[in-house]
Length: 135
Image (tube, rainbow, N blue to C red):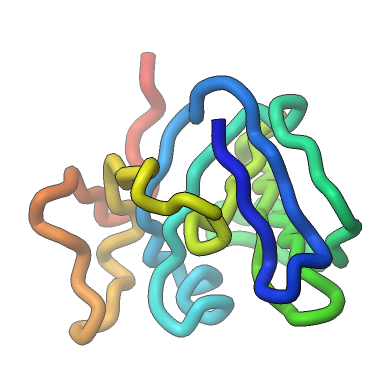
């Protein structure tokens, strides 16, 4: 289970069950929306319940498919993203977790795009682009 909220507390969430995966993303969109990389924790969309309403913005992601990003309309905190390439999955921004020490990233993706001043941790598996699908 994971719980989190935005800076002002207007948008919150509770995620039940186990996370599907989690890690650091260095893609261009994550860099632009966070000034560096984004750390996310993925859950099945039905497992996440929100309090308050996030404002959403959709743009084309690196895959060529849409990515919908949710953020607090009051304080601007990024709360989640929903990539069309991962239907039924929501990526919660790990920085919004109430207890961030309960989460440990498992990988880094799009590392070929990481700036020299924000290199991926050498202790995690890294993928220059999107990792191959699990079979």
